[in-house]
Image (tube, rainbow, N blue to C red; front, side, top):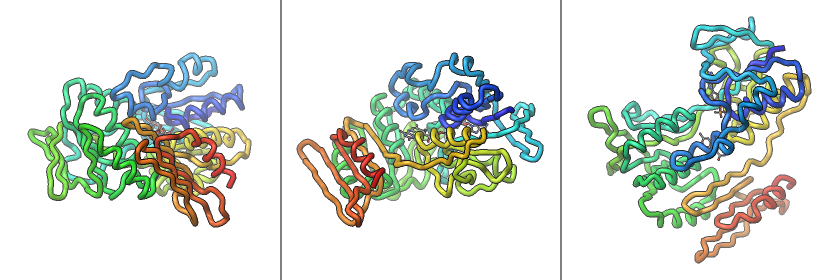
Length: 379
Ligand SMILES: Cc1cc2nc3c(=O)[nH]c(=O)nc-3n(C[C@H](O)[C@H](O)[C@H](O)COP(=O)(O)OP(=O)(O)OC[C@H]3O[C@@H](n4cnc5c(N)ncnc54)[C@H](O)[C@@H]3O)c2cc1C
């Protein structure tokens, strides 16, 4: 049996490894448009300013794939597939067959439809090739950067750019910081602390209406009532699932490729996992969820009916010397708040009507993070 996996992210990696554990004889091939073997994508944001060792960056050394007979076909982009005849088509014009297919194509950065996105010096960071382009640009010298999007990734990127000596302005359309990970009270605490960071400007409740250029190169962004100069604009405004090939092949797609909890799509013997999938009506965009979906897809391809069971996926952020953790539902019938303005330590616990812990936000002191996460999971 030939298992073809499209993508080389964590969902693809986990699926390949799980499939090999369950089936010593299956042919397992991983096709990816990226030219590097599977790596830890979250490391990319800090790698704009930091050297990360190969052991920390790559999920496994090449020897792992050789020993487990997992064939890596890198630099190959799937352009189309036909589920009726089980055929894959690649950008080179080559075709391949499969018995079981896993789509683990991940997501791409969303580029808001504002004029000027095509200018030289407007970039986003999703894949290793993006990191190489960003590093080359920074090495050539960048003074001022605007980051569009003040979410977790936007702030991580802002930190790396500050470390590279840039002056950074983060523009976020929501009126508060990290709206998916903090409530208003916690956002105000964090916002006040980040306001003290030198060479960092945070503009909330403001949207970029256009990116300005001169001679084809970016020179700033236009906001209501002001222009912010920039030599580089980084777009970090969310991600969209890579569904084009699946939709063209007639698979049911919404925001992601629709799957059931066994990661099966609407086409026979075609599965989807990770950021490209919408499993049981939900999309996650999170590393750990992608990993678990990849494992579930492989098990189900090989006949073990084991569903993907979503967990509590907490958010963690460590930027500008500030540590933030949040998990669960950030509202409730009752909450407990502790805040020490001198140390900056903030802690808010949310309880549901039954009195059980439903969610928490920790800033500054994360020692209880795992304990609280486990309490939320069982309540
Ligand atoms: C900078 C950054 C920081 C992040 N930090 C965090 C974090 O701290 N915590 C967290 O939980 N999540 C984080 N994420 C999100 C996390 O990385 C993703 O949820 C996870 O990588 C999804 O894994 P995946 O395998 O589904 O897809 P991906 O990792 O996106 O991999 C998809 C692969 O498919 C390939 N591909 C796509 N289309 C084709 C095609 N047609 N043909 C061939 N190959 C194709 C792509 O090139 C890519 O290699 C971060 C993401 C980024 C970009």
